[in-house]
Length: 305
Figure (cartoon, one colour):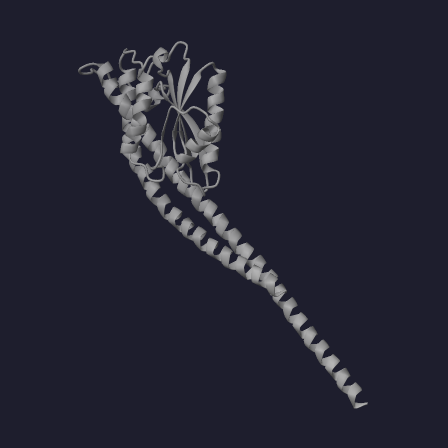
């Protein structure tokens, strides 16, 4: 019984130490969510105005720019997948990877070849373990991305969309990331960034029936698009990185809270088992004392006779 009690106590100490770690990680993740949310909100106005500017140029001119014109028969697509660098975040990375796999299957079913670009060590490890080709990958900044990181990721994607498909370029550019909806809800989404969709442009021009303004572009609409669209891609990727970072912290906070609660329940269960083992040990010792006392009394009575 004594050995069993020592085992229970050792397990209780181990689980208690783990509970302290998960609780600390939960608090750290909770504090980082607020900062990530602020960054997402701060990036929204710039992204909104940039989209309006690009839409104005694209709809206000007859220029056929390669970044806004649908290919007649697209044969190649680039997919950017955003995952995390670290684990202990529940199903955050795995859900994003599943969404990317589903998107890639759909694109292949449409007869398109898929080039995969990955952000985050979890995605890189997933594709590397399965020996799948990755065009390019980036790691080390998923929990706190900067605009410089977004520019670094955007550069090869912009180059791919500007290159002829026959020379290794891409006709379409898709991005898969985790959208931060709330503290409890984070949803993996896949969006097509390029060619730019202009379906909602009329709604953004103003009230219904309003006369749309005419624009003159200097030096030309094509040059303006050449300057604006790379910024558009960078801003979209930056916003996706920020949303993914906030989602990662929220998922980690939720996972660590669950782990902390489970550790508490396990400690209670082990404590009950330890108390039962200690009680059994005490009962056994009392029984041995009583038995020994009875034997001694019987021996003494026999000697008196």
